[in-house]
Length: 245
Image (tube, rainbow, N blue to C red; front, side, top):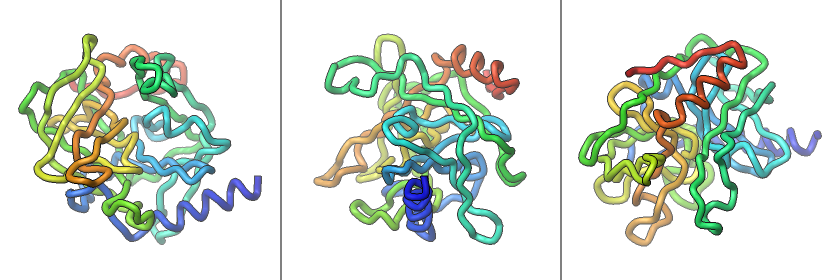
């Protein structure tokens, strides 16, 4: 256990004073106040969306495949805070090897914390409506701003993208793309994709662009089609999400 905590502390220490989202800009606005990080004992870094004072939504692959996970943020003094989840719910439609098996996967998970987040965090409104091709969406996260440089994680950044299409026969995925090399990168999984003022999807994957590993298409799991699962899970925890219809 001590080794696990040490590994998480090292990850938290490197995730500071840097940037996130390739081709984006530092952001301290509404999405930043509704976002935290999720760290794994195997060195994994992800982002997450605040749904309630003690509940966050992230990508399922961010909270599976490692021995320990922690919700991470920094306190007012800049010191790292690592909170072990009290409960975890992985979407039953999540398939860890979906790409290899050519199966669909609903890459979502909810984490309930044993305590409330600091008051500066605000629950994000969720959007059941789906953007159409050409609509503007904003992607945000704490991931890499420069590929191959782990220290460029830890600062929330956003980028303005354009919807390519809600993708798939059951409208599971949202695809969006920016100008040039712009979009989510490693560490941004689980972060928000916002349509207007509400979060419409959670980032799950990004494609390479221009010889780089990131900056192409950013893919997210649409939340509207998963509303029943999200609400049912939160109700079981005595919590509710705020939906913009």
